[in-house]
Each structure stands twice: as C-alpha cells, then as structure tokens.
Image 1 (tube, helix red, strand yellow):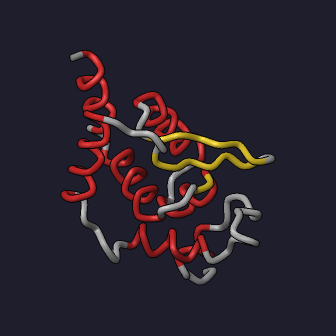
Image 2 (cartoon, rainbow, N blue to C red; image 1 turned 120 degrees about the vertical axis):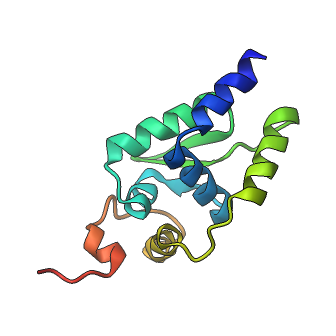
Length: 130
C-alpha cells in the first residue's frame, strides 16, 4: 500500500499532472527545454517535478548529449498502467495554451531533436517585445 500512496501524493500537484499530460499527448520523448518553454516555469522547478515523477516509475529519462529527454515509462504494468489510463481519460485539455506552446516549441526541433535550449518566452507565446 505504500507505493500507491506515494504515487498519489506525487500526482497531487497540478504541474506534475500537466507534465504527464504533455508527455502522453506528445507521444514522443520531450526535452526539459521544451517542457520549460511550454509551462513557462523556471528550469529548476520543471526538473524538480520531473524528478518526482521519475521516482514513481511513471516516466523515464534518456540523456542524449547535453539534453535530457523524458517520456512515459515504456513498461508500465498493473496499478501504474491503470492509473495512467484513468488520468488520460479525465485530463482533457485539448487546445490549451500550454499544449499550443508545446506544439510551437516542437516545430523548432532540428532533425527531430531539441537543439536550441530554453527559448525566450516571447518566442513561444507569440508576444512582441515591448
């Protein structure tokens, strides 16, 4: 019973739920840079939330050069697989601002990989310099 309780505790944070939603909908590994730009949060905050999700075993990380990519864990079984399926059914935020920023950010990939690092928030959101 300890593992499910810890997993639910980690998922009680709205940012972590947003991260899971982005990773699920993307259907491919996402770089920390892309998640930072999508959520408009500091890199340290996003990395901290990803670390907590990684501890649950719901996501996995892969380091490629200087970039770290996160994705939904490849081999989810039992409780975790069921939990992720339920989350995908109840978290429906299609067309959200965060999802739109991720789509814009993914278009900046070079040969399918992140190559730019964290970008200016204005670039992602479409705002103009004042």
